[in-house]
Figure 1 (cartoon, rainbow, N blue to C red):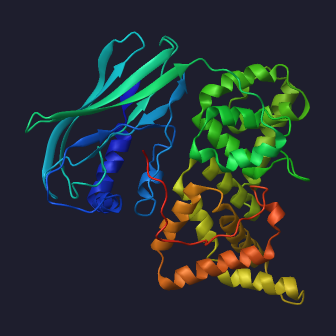
Figure 2: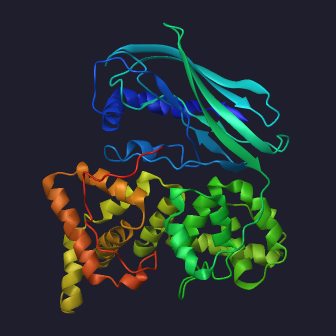
Length: 423
């Protein structure tokens, strides 16, 4: 039910040696040598366990999407955090942290514990303990209200402090399908909550089509659902049940999804449907890296997982400045010669610039990631990046935006971006 993520622990410990102190300083309040009370926090979240939302954001912009209601077999993270573990910067903290679970009957038991022996560089920065807990409830666990407690014991002083996180284990109830007009909005905002209810409602919407114009795959949707349901795979058995009565477009969507996840065996489908789904999956993989399709796939990945890597690749595409300028010239004068490679890179340049600029006002996590990347660019790179956003904005039709909404004017780059802090 609960396991300490050793793989992540090793990754974080390695990051500590290279730059964890910098991350601590980034989330630090004004440092002080005075003693303050030790506090711990134990947010539960459905966010991705690579923790990009913690490490790849500007100073004072950390936000953790909390979860309070969970379902059987749904995996979520408990992130152990502390502050003021030591009396002064650079002291070593020796302690033991434990994770305790109180079930609906009131019984409490220790589910995991780990010893800490670490130098705390900045005492009043958020300190992330060198491990997280991945939690899920099984079929044998009773429904009701649980309490997950993080308990920290200072082995030098014997002092103990704790924080409790309430979580309700509920029976899954299928939400009403989303209205067609809400699909794009819910997708763009999904990584602000990772709500399985929203995911299910979007996918079962009668207005959803996994096709796009004259091709059988909408790559942004294909990538979004493939990545989102890979995370929320406990929902697949409910979709498989729905499939028995589905027809038309909805049946096609389900076949595409289960083909992408290599789960076609879960569906009560005909052999011809299985073969068609396999062909569509093959087609999707073959063209996934083709210019505009690759960008669509990156957006779907980001909106589904909240990971930094897709955004990093989108920003990388804005570096094809010379190809982008050549494509702009070609659009004005057809006599300008352009190779196929230059054309593809030019498309990437303009589409990436336009889509980043258009989606930043709509997605707070994207805004923080872009500002984080911008902070680490040199002056020339910053100028080129802003120029790429402007070129994309000028040349792309805003109606093609994945969010399918009127673009909001806002300052695209703000290294001092301030956002609401976690409560």
